[in-house]
Image (cartoon, rainbow, N blue to C red; front, side, top):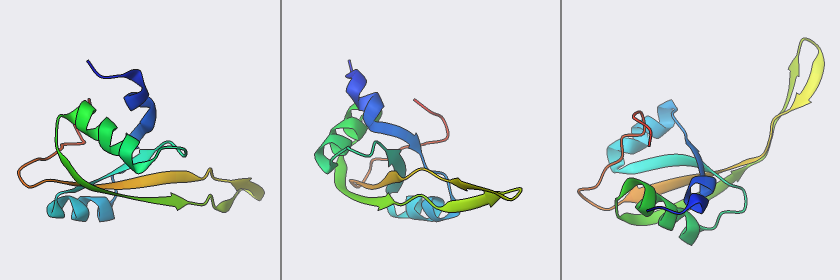
Length: 97
């Protein structure tokens, strides 16, 4: 049984053109909690998807200032994790958990 903290660590998969190109190199991109560390992300992916992780790279994207109908707004900061899986393992992020 997986711990509930694993579900709090991984927020959602990132499905963009760049992340689908990365999937050809056995990589999956997730939006993760701001305070999540690389070992926590590794443990969560291995527990939730039953795969082996080779490496985890993270980046913190600062929120952008945008305008909508003349009103200024700000997007939230978020952390992304690029997870490289070991050879022979794969995750289909379109099916969900």
